[in-house]
Length: 157
Image (cartoon, rainbow, N blue to C red; front, side, top):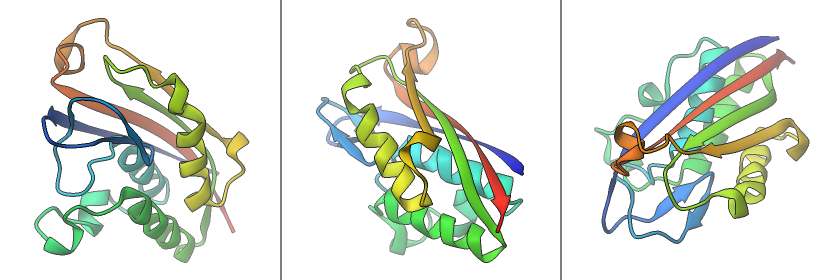
């Protein structure tokens, strides 16, 4: 078994959809970014890459390349999973936390879990997604941004 940790943060801006874990959530602002800026899927992808010692998401999908502009992060996660598999590893489990002051994410967590489990070829029972606020502190608390953290284990195939 190997363990990896991932983290992502994006500024919240108007005229962008709020997409977290592959789920579009009604809200007046969304994360700015080159792709769809799904911080949850980006954190999971970074955790997988880290566990396999393969670098980070930006090394494979740089924000300087037009090819990745507006990219669906579920596609990026599928490609990361394939890359990890090409190096002899398979995802084993994921535990992730989204940091967002509002809206409440609880109604969307099951869909997020399914959207992570699918590209990783995992049973949904091996994927945990939690959400928390920062009690009004920092960029998340001021509602200037959204962040996510993820830890995952991978195993040799």
